Image 1 (tube, rainbow, N blue to C red):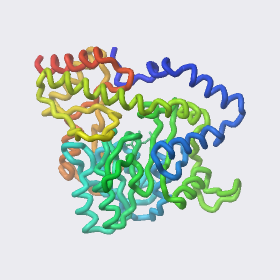
Image 2: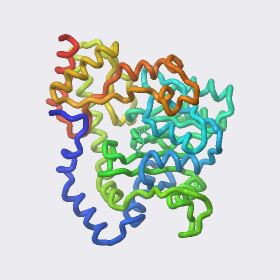
Image 3: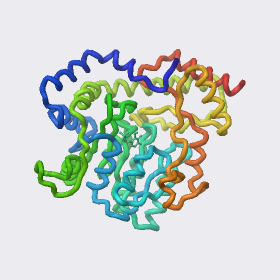
Image 4: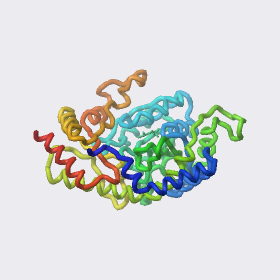
Amino acid sequence: MIPLFDLTRQYSSIKEEIIVAVDKVLASGRVILGPEVKKLEESIADYLKVNYAVGVGNGSDALVIALRAMGIKKGDKVITTPYTFFATASSIVRNGGKPVFVDVEPESYNIDLNQVEYVLKNETVFGIIPVHLFGQTVDLEGLNYLKEKYGVKVLEDCAQSIGSEGEVNGEIKKSGTVGDAAILSFFPTKNLGAYGDGGMIITNNVEIYEKSKTLRVHGAKKKYLHDEIGYNSRLDEIQAAILNVKLKYIDLWTEKRAKIAEKYAIEFEKRQLPIKFPKILEKSYRYHVFHQYVIEFESNKIREKVKEHLKNNSIGTSIYYPLPLHLQKCFKDLGYKKGDLPVSEKLSQTTLALPIFPELTYSEIETIVEKIKEAMEG
Ligand SMILES: Cc1ncc(COP(=O)(O)O)c(C=O)c1O
């Protein structure tokens, strides 16, 4: 069996350290917002080279809290992509705002910044939530240009992209450091994953930082004195302790993911199959952290055939995402219809995510690609 994702292989390599870290928290009796959360916030801020970080309950809450801390008001429009996880767009509605979906680029699957600019030229918009999808950095130069030119707020969704890099004015920057704020998810399958839920808001802006910190504890700056109605959304102390262990390995694990992607590319190249790959630019910096390895088939029929064959051979796959957000029932009132955002709609029918995690072996990759060939030629 080759799973899509496997947490147990990683655990066996760091087990002793994790047990010590968890035991330390339990023995200390400090289990809510203690020194481990603080340490993780400082370490992540340091890693990403930003001023502030606020640990919260999960990435979805991080989006909701960050948007609110940035000052979104009822009815405000926020541009985002329909080809992402649901929470990216629901955070806008949960704040009383209105998502404006624009399509993604067919080559990178990331939000098309030309289409974003078109909307900015024609409508009054509060902000943009770009998603560095599957671990690939959105064009940071372009994003920065839009932010400066249109004075629009930017919240980067880095749930899938911790450590990925781009370039702004000749300077290499990590994803999450160009916007007014950014969010991370520590969902177990993420590149930096906890053993439960977790998330973080990062920012260079002191007001967003202070406001996020207050909002995660019911809007109280001082305990039991509530300036506003916030949330109960704190990063768990035990999860923070686990993440403090894991953060030391993030660059090593990212290197392994990149090597796995390279091996996949070699194996596919050998077999010359009619498969399309997202365009991954050759850069001197870490443009992609390979949270997912996603390939694209010529038709839905072929995708389904391959998916089925891999399943029959105990190889895990997943479809990210089977229904783009503009066509979700819960967003019906926004008025989008089939055909409005054709690239996202096509990708939802033709892409397939293959197993990728740092411990995946080269021989497993060879098996996966061979089984894909079998399905396509059979
Ligand atoms: C792009 C994106 N945004 C937001 C989230 C939400 O994160 P979480 O699952 O931690 O709430 C996820 C993860 O599932 C995601 O992939």
